[in-house]
Image 1: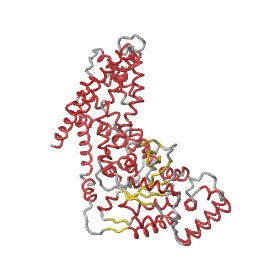
Image 2 (image 1 turned 90 degrees about the vertical axis):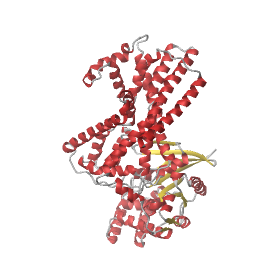
Image 3 (image 1 turned 30 degrees about the horizontal axis):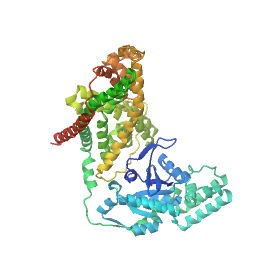
Image 4 (image 1 turned 90 degrees about the horizontal axis):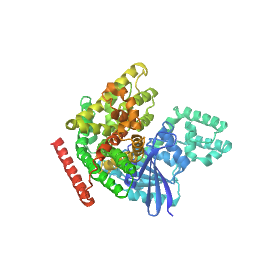
Length: 634
């Protein structure tokens, strides 16, 4: 039986933690939420050299303070779950800042492996890091990695196993100024006297510093009043001597240690180099041209997405309707299946879910382009560009990030508003998010636009997105002037350097999000399609869909939609189902109309011939997509 190693992956935002886990585990990444909160939780498990290694990607944090939900989660997991090994991912090009979290992790006393990520970028920038000396000073294994290229993955896994087997905790204790250390010792004696159990339950140094700072959220047992009183006295004595608040003193002491380590281990090549990030920022963050460039890129993404995906949509549709559906129909009939079972499978399942799956290529390509923008570092700049405009609505550029996420799915976008500190901004952003056209709505747009506006797909869909954004702006402006009056909060954002994302990174991210949609199609949409099919065929023996229970319900509510121009029962019924999930609109229409299609009872082609034709059709779709790209850029 394999030994199980639990590895907590910790690091600052934008250090490539998730990219490194993807490089290690491939697409075996499971995404959920941390219990009791809406912060995303990512996990992956792999088998390696007789070990089962379980990775838990902690939220990106700059420290282990008590300021955000992410920091609380990280501290509580590290202390309460006691992972076997902590993998600290740091940015090699920004080592001085990243080491602050490393010092805190060492204070926790957990076995540590440090991944010097973006090692290739550091080399390009002329940054030389003495890895052996850094290992000695930090009492931990240090491994250079380039996660985007998959470099250093094997070495990381070997180091994790080595550290796990040694069962040794880091012996490093970084001392602050003598007076501070004396006071820490004094606090330790106080705890030993009044509540010694605390020293058994929690890492000693981290506990002492946390009590002094008042960061007690991770402590489950009630702290003695005598301990708290003495801690307050000691804190005031330290603050009186240094003439600063305790948090500032601790931060400065840690950075003093970091500076010493940095000076001993890092050498920078000072000669003049062209910084591509500064050059590109002069273009993309330009006061006048920044916003038009952003809008142009948005248009270009939609144009490329729909032009490339269009041939694949046609191929997918043809494959389902002309090959798979007839084959399944023929197979069921040959097996003597009843008429209702044949109808359920061909109309309810293939006709319902299949209608939605046809638009998977659109989602995949859109997610791929979004992953490219995110991985390149441009997405953070888009938020910065929009800050000035968002301030007119009483929001900051930070609100733009949840709004952008809303184009993928409204639910995680609402979750993302947790990062907004201002309650007014949080509520206002949540109210704007539903107007952002999510991926589910995109499938509905693509369905109708392909039918009615084939020659102007990009323009029409971009207009639909634009109308949603415009309505959101109007609503936000009115609410900001009436209900949510007040100034917007300042926006501070770290802009990562520009990078060229690898094809693997882009495709992996696109596949993970598409897979989530496919899972929804295989469960929720499938169940809804089956329910709709039963409603369309009840009471038993009904001949026309409009006479079914679903048809009667739809006819009853249809007049309500008459002023909107679609008062027929089919449209009304599809719209009602859309309240459950937007993409179900398409599967419902598939259920309504598939019966008419299947009455023709198409003759299935021979299986071998059909498979060859499907393959040939896919190759044709690839060639058509290539021509579309040449047309756009030619």
